[in-house]
Image (cartoon, rainbow, N blue to C red; front, top):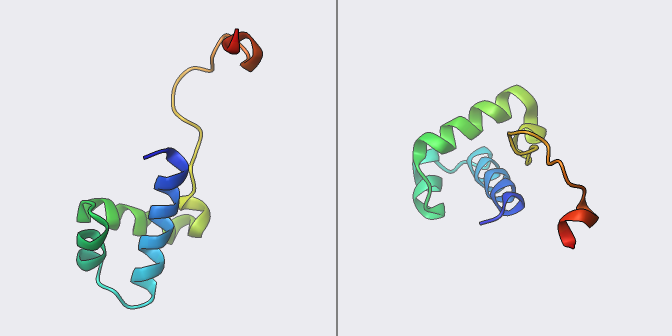
Length: 71
């Protein structure tokens, strides 16, 4: 699953919980670990939906730019 799809999954999970579903049930239906769901809820509590969106991948920036990588 790509990073954008994972962000959408996190948003969906938190939305379902806010609509009354239990975190355990959401985790089971979405096929994720319940600890992850509780971590997402913590991020939501701190930063709202912005905290659930994808972030820059950790690590050093590439030395080549996009056009150099293509060739």
